[in-house]
Length: 262
Image (cartoon, rainbow, N blue to C red; front, top):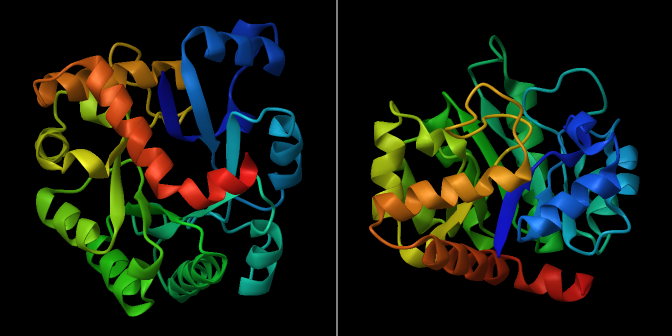
């Protein structure tokens, strides 16, 4: 059984599944996917996403606004708290810094990031961190805001071992997406080999970033198996061990929230 620790289920192309979310979820079950964490990126589409997954106990939610989203509501701490108190919500984010798609005066992005950290600490729910071309500032803000108190996930990890070590020291887990299967992902493969066994997770980030052999095509949670298989090769172990360990890690990180959602 596998867990997809980061996916965007409301953005999937369901045409291969008769345009039916129920049909898609049956395929997920058949693929032995035990649990999915469906990640929010804005507040405008959040009610529909929440309704989509409401009847599925094997799906948990995050709440937050992605660092690149400019059109729409920019939540303050109180708004994040109100939404984050829902028992189905087990994480806050995805949040962070992205200097690849955003440029200029990014004070708004930094403040948004800090608001999410504040809400996560109050709710005692882990953070889902997105960082791109902003590794130094991401680590700095996490440190300044005391994010180690709550920890969370560096999702879709694309940095090097130096960054990983600092994130691990602040109680963050490292989550690998399909990018780890790409031939040119040398630094990421190195981290996948070296990260402590009790601190890694696997994800798809579907419908984005499909792993080899589906690279360039729409991604689905079922493809998390390919991420796990590749990490098993890198760590010279079995798919079963990667699945079991990453599941234990997920449940360890989210134990309090998952218990409330049981």
